[in-house]
Length: 486
Ligand code: NDP
Image (tube, rainbow, N blue to C red; front, side, top):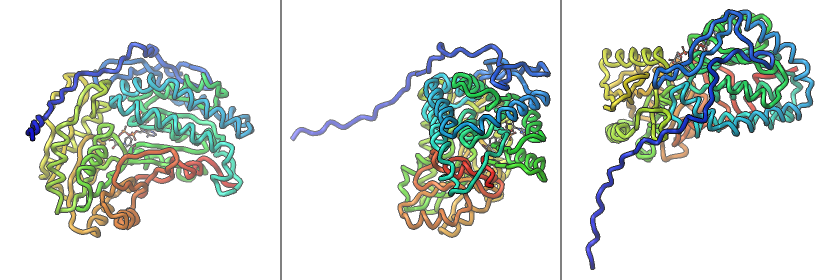
């Protein structure tokens, strides 16, 4: 018999595969979107939004001040009676139309999301934009079936809702907020984050294309002071916020004593728990997805990796090998796994926490890679020898940094996972269904994934416990914060 020729390992070299941007037409300057029209800010102030991968300016964007917040809230208030009275089926059709238009402009939206925020095009193309459309489709379906979603209770819309979104999933967070609000008959004033306003402004164009009645959705780019003014506006009926726990607490204090609705989706320090009976290679992929997806700028990122001692060494070694194959660089390259850090300020926060990790005695390993000369970058980083009290085990880093802790028993895993001020999400890697269910029940986390991580679906509610906030977004549960039960 002829001997089989031994196979030789193939050396894979990826050629650059940049997404073309020549069909994207951004305006030089974006105004505020109020009462169905574009209007300049009262203050006359515009700020450049930049590409964090190159530091090149993309467009000038109006910054809304107090007078603009007044105008937007007044427009939303004036639009409310007609929007509320519209037959629910008709309201649903508008929401459906928005979903269709997002799909039609998906490629453009994905590119602009990556340009403005630094995330890999593969993620904005395959996750952010399709999920944003899916949220509008999903809630379009609820518009005329609210009674079923609310267990038959009579309900009315909250009224005018103020919505403040962060920079990590700009269009998707806008969709999470606007889709249920509109389906339930509310009108809205949305403030995108200062560093990523562009897709929200393209969404305003979509609202115009969908011929959504003027004033139903108003979009006010600005900084934290715009958000603070919106929160404190006396004619707001509800605030929905996603962002840092610090700002969430400020909002909670500012709304205390007022009869308004509030939902807060805040930070996290989520535990990703690997038991010794898990499929290790699959778990390693899940760990990578859990922490390096979107550069770790994910509120539910699996940033605390809890490994059972008997497999810890094997998992760490395999993880480190896998991290070495992550491609860090141009967000518009279709091969890129880890893009740019969203802003100089966020890069500084990550660097400060990583320095603290080293100072406190944890062992740091950072992937060696050539980073672009301009822009904000942080290579994938792994910390071992981490003590539960270290800042890198306690504070949300919101970057591509994972801290490894170990445990011996299931009870210890649960205790360590729950020993956090946060309670947003968790992952459980095990071959045993009974163990997965028992651990999931014992975890104080809004979402628990088994043998996977970072899976999102509009039908599935999302939200936290403890300092991760309260209220649910997504699913039928996501309708509840947008109605007042009579
Ligand atoms: P913020 O909480 O400051 O930003 C979230 C949104 O709130 C932005 O639109 C922001 O505007 C706005 N905002 C800021 N201050 C106020 C205020 N006083 N009242 C109302 N709205 C306000 O987050 P950062 O951008 O500062 O990020 C800091 C840290 O927060 C990150 O390192 C991360 O740990 C965490 N974070 C968590 C997120 C999550 O999804 N859970 C999302 C983003 C951040 P502007 O952008 O103009 O400042």
